Image 1: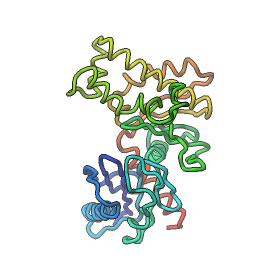
Image 2 (image 1 turned 90 degrees about the vertical axis):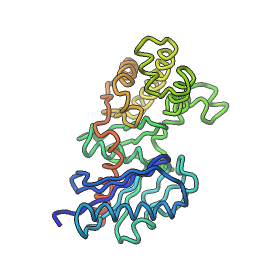
Image 3 (image 1 turned 135 degrees about the vertical axis):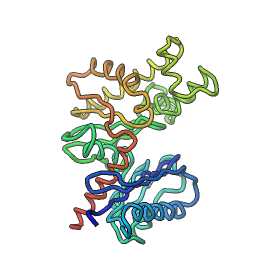
Image 4 (image 1 turned 60 degrees about the vertical axis):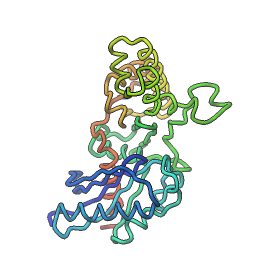
Length: 305
């Protein structure tokens, strides 16, 4: 066998993605399936069987040396559990690391999905060589991975980077929840709802951008509001942390690219004394998976394997 293989798992509310990668980050095999619910134990068992099947397909008789897992929520890497699994009811305090790694006798590295994406971008993507940067995941929800002095900053409660909660109006302070925060206004659910409201039930989020580009005044006005709120979030983040770069990834950001990010960058940089790079992810949908691979490799190194 020429090298050892690492399994990466991206467990989300909509899909479960599993990949087998080499130690240099090359993805050798992958499989994606809708998240079908069921007990966490049953889902983890299915993920384990997928890992075993994929790695044997890469090399006859092969087994993985370590597993990296990322998922939304407050993840405790040391215990291998997630205490608050966003959009995954019933997963709180489930010993994912033990259930997945135990039967295979391998270490499991677990991390929040935005944190994992930040690790991936620093390893092989847009943040290569950077020690201070923020990865913003703009997809169905909004999250961020914070890297300071070359290390993930997780916070006292493993909730650093939860920019979804940034208040966008004074009303949020008096009625906290999901009505006036950044994710409510600029997350993927808001795009889908607004597309349906303005363009019809069959409209998709991308249709909003097409309509705005074509001169639709309602779509243009709404998009400007979203871009202004994202720019305000960037200004807040950059003013506090003074990063070298802010990297945007996630489904919405990657689908819309510069027609979303360009005006956001321009507005944010007008307000900042320093000018961090504000760029798109280079890894796209693979940022989380490759971050999970890197974290698993680091766990092996910590254990002297």
